[in-house]
Structures are given as C-alpha cells and as structure tokens.
Length: 364
Ligand code: HEC
Ligand code: HEC
Image 1 (tube, protein in one colour):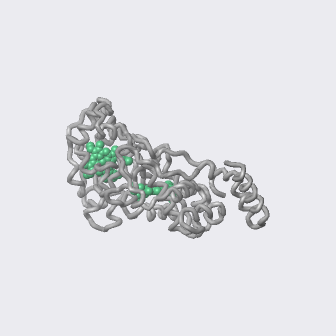
Image 2 (cartoon, rainbow, N blue to C red; image 1 turned 30 degrees about the vertical axis):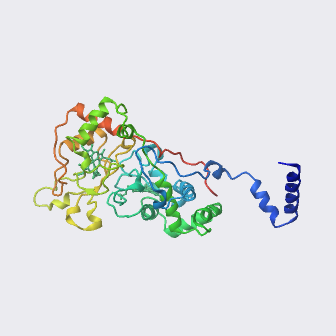
Image 3 (cartoon, rainbow, N blue to C red; image 1 turned 180 degrees about the vertical axis):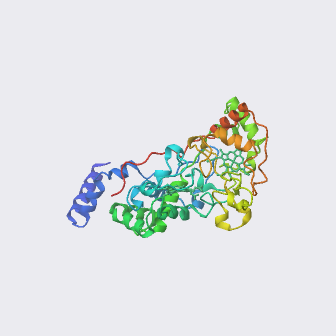
C-alpha cells in the first residue's frame, strides 16, 4: 500500500467514526464472533466421499442452511422440557443411530422402534422416511419427532416459540433464508440440510469398487461374494446406499398367533400396512442402509437381532416364515465361517464423511 492510500484509508475511518449511525456497526464487525459461531463456522458443502454422488443444488442444500441445521439438530430446546434433542437418539458416534433396541424420549418414555441411521439419507433411490415410509421428505420427517409424545413431546408452536426465544438464532435464519422469520418449515429445512451433509463413503468397499483390488480383506472379499452371490442380498440392498428404499416383510417381529387366530394378528408391528392399509404390506418395513451398520447394533426395526452374526443366520434360515414373507427371501446354506465373512463385508461398508461431534455452544 502506498503512502497516499494509507492516508486515504485513515481519512475514511475518521469519517466513518464521525457518523454516529455507522459507529456501532464498525464495533460489532471488529468484535470476535460468539463462541457458537467460532465453533461452527460457515463452511463450503462437503465434497462427496469416494463412491457417493450428490447434487446439492437439486437437494436445495446450502452451507448457510446446513450450519443452522447443525445447531438445531443438537438443540434440546426443540423438546417440550428442554431435555431431548434429535441427537439424543441419533448419535453421531453410532452413525446417527444408537445402540438401544428402542429409544428413550421425554420423561424416560420409550417407543417400540429402533432409531435408524440416516447417513446418505438424502440420496434415496425412492425417498420415504421412517421404517414404514410415512414421510416423503426429510423435512416432513423432522416434524414428526418434535410432536411425538414419547420423543420430544412438544407442539410445533412450542418449537417455533423456543427457537425464537433464543434471539441469537435470528441472524442465522436471515443468512439461510433471506429474512429473520423463524417458522417451522424453515427449522425443518435447515435440519434436513444438516442431515443431507452426513455422507458416508470411501469405505473399503468403495475403494474396491473404484478398482483397488486389495482394498478388501480376504474375509470381506469372501463376504462380498456371498452378498452378491448365494445370499442374493442385493435384491433389496442395492445402489450407492445399499437400499432400494422399498418395503419388505422379512419376518422380523412375527409370531404364529396359534390355531383359530387370524395370521395377521401375529405381527407385533404391522409396519407399512398402517400407512397404506394394503394387506400385502403387512409386516413390511423399509430396507435400511447397510453403510456403517457395524456402528449400531442391535438390528432391525425392533432391535430384536443382537448382532450382525444373528442377522446372517436369520437370512440363511429364510427369515421367519409368515403369510406375507417377501418372495426374495429364501433359505441358503451358511457355515459359521461364511457368517463371519458376511459380517466382515458389512464392516467393509464403514465409511467416512458423516462424522461429527455435538457442538458445545448453541445460539442463545
Ligand atoms: C426419542 C428418540 C428420537 C428422537 C428425539 C428423534 N428421533 Fe428420529 N427416529 C427415532 C425412531 C425410533 C425412528 C423410527 C420411527 C419409525 O420408523 O416409526 C426415527 C426415525 C428418524 C428418521 C428416518 C430415517 C429413515 O431413513 O427412515 C430420521 C431422518 C430422523 N428420525 C431424524 C430425526 C430428527 C431430525 C429429529 C429431531 C427433530 C429426531 N429424529 C428425533 C427416534 C428419535
Ligand atoms: C427382500 C429384501 C431383502 C433382502 C433380500 C435382504 N434384506 Fe436385509 N433388510 C431388508 C429389510 C426390509 C430390513 C429391515 C427389516 C425389519 O426391520 O423388519 C433389512 C435389514 C437388514 C440389516 C439390519 C440393518 C439395521 O440397520 O438394522 C442387515 C445387516 C441386513 N438387512 C443385511 C442383509 C444381508 C447380509 C442380506 C443377504 C443375506 C440381506 N440383508 C438381504 C431387506 C432385505
């Protein structure tokens, strides 16, 4: 900078200082950003990890929404009594699922279904959320737990009022949506944007699939052959996220109700049927992603299978026979060693990109 430029700059500062309206703005700009912002700076959207394709524009995800959504996702003020956040049941260290068969929500209340992982959840082949697919978008999905009496136990009005009371949120709504209005649709849109950035890829499988023949251990490689071969697992677990996004009855949670009782009364949870009322959907649940499944035993919509090994023998038996068992499910021979190989292949789907830790400061 030349001398003249320096002098000019000084003059501009002096001038600005004289204008009373400008003074506070200058002061605010030079102050350090608040703790929650230092910890959660605006970042470009993540580059998709190997094996994953994402179109941020089509998903309407922006860095501003994702950053706001990250705070909201971890904010217990979204619940009626300020104790439960989305992350209570969707824990980053368990690939945004948890290691309990049933979640515990507000006041220690428990539901009957397992909290599913949503890694790569925005990239669904046929989008449907919840085990029974009752929500068509991540945005619509996020409205559910807020008002579920055994989850966050609030009303949507309460959620908006609580977020509005934390005045420091306002500028971030402006940044993400153009003005400071805090609405339910904006809250869930921001949360969905954060969820969409939880990608998982660059697993041993992705490296193998991209041409690295040595990426899989010998056991995982044998498991891969079983998965795509004898086990025919890819009839339903397919695509970049290992799910068809469709609904199947593989016999989890069905018990023979005994003679004289209608077979339909054998389902502990009727699954997709409660959404469609189509008898062929009795006991059908959404195919979950297999990515990072090693991080969140127990398994299935009811958490009834304790380990991946148990899952493999469930399939090898041909599931649990029941009136609506999916025709893609059939018994196949499986030794202990085969089961270990399949489990090794499941672990080869552990990826990178979704990892996060809860922020320790939230806008106040
Ligand atoms: C008390 C535990 C609990 C809390 C709190 C909770 N969830 Fe869930 N979540 C679950 C359970 C259980 C399911 C499955 C319910 C079902 O299928 O009926 C689920 C399902 C989901 C799914 C569907 C995933 C898929 O692929 O189908 C998403 C996404 C999700 N939750 C996000 C959220 C968000 C966002 C919040 C906060 C606004 C939240 N959850 C709060 C337990 C919880
Ligand atoms: C007919 C479609 C279909 C086929 C074939 C299939 N799956 Fe599944 N898979 C599902 C569905 C649906 C669920 C969830 C069922 C439930 O919760 O009731 C599931 C659940 C799982 C889970 C539990 C994931 C979790 O997060 O709880 C694993 C692991 C799994 N499958 C692996 C496999 C393997 C390995 C094979 C091949 C041996 C296989 N699947 C074949 C549809 C299928």
